[in-house]
Length: 181
Image 1 (tube, helix red, strand yellow):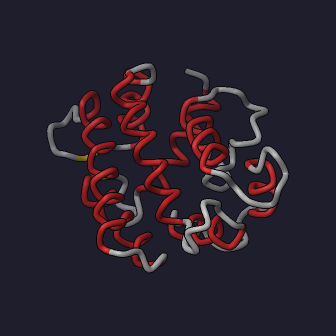
Image 2 (cartoon, rainbow, N blue to C red; image 1 turned 90 degrees about the horizontal axis):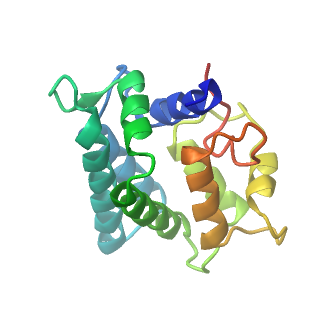
């Protein structure tokens, strides 16, 4: 895997390691889901769907990643787990379910699209500090058809591209904010 892809995975890790202890755990994943649901004023059913989706993705990550058998992943172990499972259809099913859950959660006004304001909420809940990157530019890059809103198809494609593509020129490389070193 390219060093560039590894940077994206370290960025994703940083997003998930909300307590910044150098590990991600199922608790980090579930807490992120609950924080996001609360920020979006999600109902109980939507919250539970999102929490369950996060738990399922966590289980997929752990399949190849719990080397220490402690239920936690470091950035390097997450990268190795993702590398091993990159073409696993089971992971892709769980990621697709999770991404659709994220979309449904973030679509606060339930119009079937993410508006720039809703994307902003997602970025804040992902732990990206205010002013660290141009959200409008990132949103515009993800908005493939240029209609000023993100369809579920655009959102899913951008998220999956971020997670699995090694294309250094992809407009989706900053889906979760600026890449870490």
